[in-house]
Length: 272
Image (cartoon, rainbow, N blue to C red; front, side, top):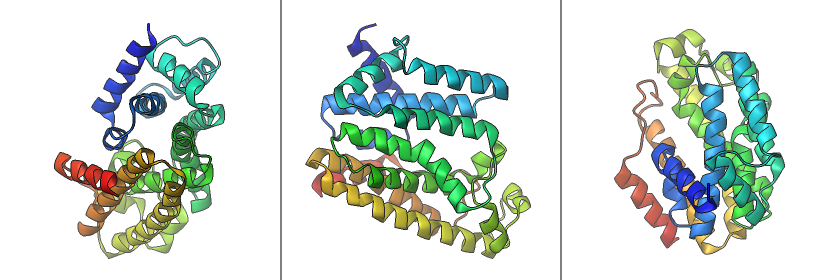
């Protein structure tokens, strides 16, 4: 398969599957947009394996095979595109290995005792995406890129509580659930009462703090890369605003942004 055909495939995947990602990268030049799409497609492959219906041992085998494929001649469009992106932008192998480690962690762990434990997970599954992408933006501010990735993952965790519960996972730290008087029975029943709202307000505050710290990354980016990152951040901030406006009731799965809202936020990113 040609490199152009491989990139076309990962771009199609990104447009079809990415809820927010595809809007942000529209503002990038072609080569950078294609490279970011390849990184997304790799992260998506990890997620699809970890969240799929295969037996746990088969999931682990597939994830380990995916890790090994990073150091072998590419065999499918995603890997062809990713190999080219890595050669053009020096995307660090460590970030891609961290993504696989995050997928493996999802096959091994479904509860987190405290935030420090959750933070480590978030840095693997989302901070690593930031680190991989910042190489494409040609910035060396990997710490803020990782922090921004964690911020977006914390918002995902808030938004996807019901979906994660149905997968048998609770990412909200166990000590914080206890401190706010929220039980897993409350999550199962979708009870968004006073204790739940207080817990989620705390989660929102932490996500916003990470978001603001991570946005320091913009200082090291060119204008189009900064517009891309601003769009990502704006989309997630709008999602968090919507969650808050609903009294943190995320249990019916309708906390999504309209296409009009996404385009408006993308326009704001371009005008910043």
